[in-house]
Length: 198
Image 1: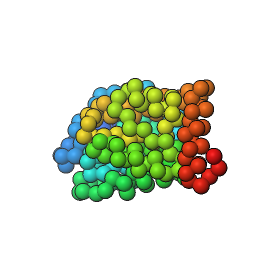
Image 2: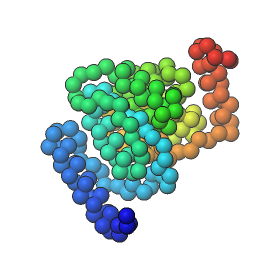
Image 3: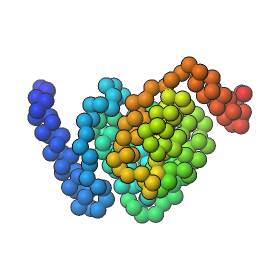
């Protein structure tokens, strides 16, 4: 299979984006996609991302999943699949479980405020979920706390900020150094209460 010229590839991406946006907008589900350069997220887009939402986060989940796929990530959609009312703990647990068992490298969970989903995800061994609401909290959660699940509140942040947070969260490397001992203490506390060794 021959490679397509970059100009043609960009035209195809633009056409696909316009079609998907039009279909989703016609369904009243997703606001227009922002203009952006997907190459600035990361050079190595390896690793599968589990993404889930309750009914309040459904539209934002759909948008973020599309953008992540366009950026080259493998995305495992844990649902929900509509705006029909559901319980966020079911979906937050599924996202966290997939990260905990190694099926997915990262998880993203969206509900109305992001708080409840962070609480649920942090009950799953090995998960360090962080509710992020700006670029600073996204950076801090990855660099200092080695967060592997990101929770977002669709009712509190807009879709453009949410995408900026996701990009920053994925692009921020683990700081290690002095932070490693603190994360080890977090994991030791978890082990103490989950039947593992302290």
